[in-house]
Picture (cartoon, rainbow, N blue to C red):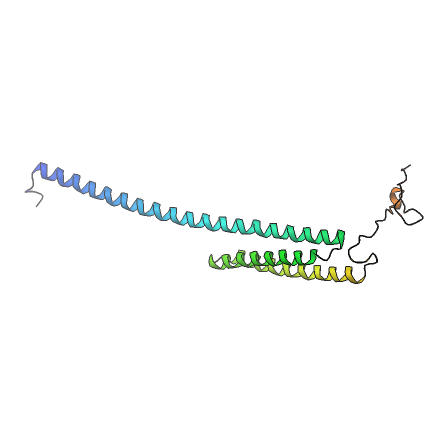
Length: 172
């Protein structure tokens, strides 16, 4: 068959075959590139969601700590529901992180989310105990801040004899 073709036919056939094979290579390259880009974008969007959830968890944890600090400073019972609301939001974000880890089949992230959930629960229980202790045994009464004492014998500073807050003595 090749013997009967003219030189022009052989050249056109060879060039046509090369163009066809180049088209196959370009199509395979396009398919592989688009698949890799889609997977990368999916991975990137998942990482962005994980990062946003982690920042939300951090924010809610800081808000819980703020409510706890404010409660300790003022002993204001209005801080307790605010703390509980922030803790509920914290637990919700941790659950979201756990669900995302399950969706991505990420065992390590799922384990971290479970550990964070147990720590958040322990933190909430510890705060409830703290509130109960401060409400039951508060000599200043609820809503009042007790006087602070400045007893630091190693620095030469002691409480004034009348129990009030007096001027601090100068160090020798």
